[in-house]
Amino acid sequence: MKTRFLLITLACTALLLGTNCKEEKSIYEDCCGASPTADLMELDNLPPQYAGQKGAVYVPNIFLSGDPTTLDNLFMVFGNELVYLIKEFKCTGTDGSTLFVQYDFQPSDTGFGWTGELADGSFYYGPFNYSVTVRYINQLEKTLTGKACAVKCNAGDFPAQNLPDCFFPGQNNGNGQPDQTLASPQECF
Image 1 (cartoon, rainbow, N blue to C red):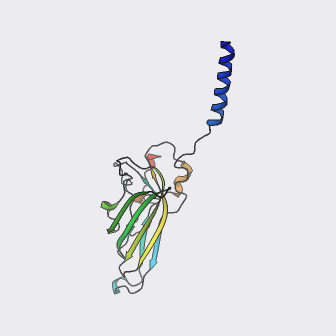
Image 2 (image 1 turned 120 degrees about the horizontal axis):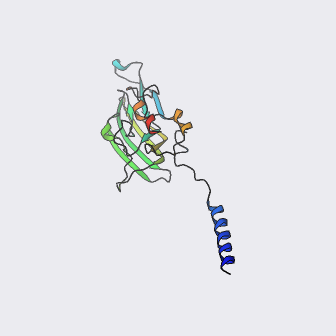
Image 3 (image 1 turned 90 degrees about the horizontal axis):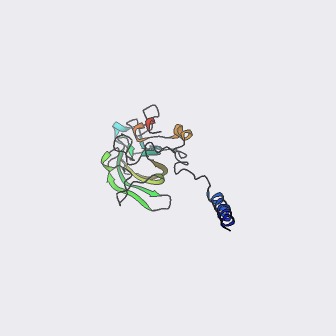
C-alpha cells in the first residue's frame, strides 16, 4: 500500500511539474527593440546666431538602474542649445503606472535624471514607456514618446543579441544626438 501511494504521489508530482515547468521569458527580452529618440526639429523664427540649425533631442533606450558606479545609471533627456526647456519628462510602467516624473528643467541636467528608484526605495527593472514634452527657444513645443529598458548590471539574463541596438545615456554626442562609437558599459553584459 505504501509503495502504491508513493508511486501515485510521484506520478502526480511529475505531471504537475511537467505542466508548470515552462521556460520563463527574461524581463529584458524586449529591451532595445525600440529605437532611441533622436529627434531633429526644424525651427522657424530663430535668432540670427542659430540660423539653419535644428533643435536636437536624444533619449536613450536603455540605462543601468540602481547602479551608482557607472555614468550610464541615469535615464535622462539630452538636448542641444535650441532646446529651451523640458516641460515634462514622465516614465511609466508597461501597466501605465507612473514610475518617475519631472517638470520644467534644462536638458542634459543630471539632477533631473531617473536612477530607476521607485517611491518605496526599490529599483525598477525591465521595459517601460516614456514621454518628453520639449519647448524650443522659439517657444514651439513638441511631445516625444518611446520605449526604454532599465537593466541591472550583471543580471545575467540580458539577451546579448540585443546589445547592438542599445543606446546608453553615455552615448550622447553632447549636441542632443546618439553616438554608438562612444563607450557603453559592456562589462555589465
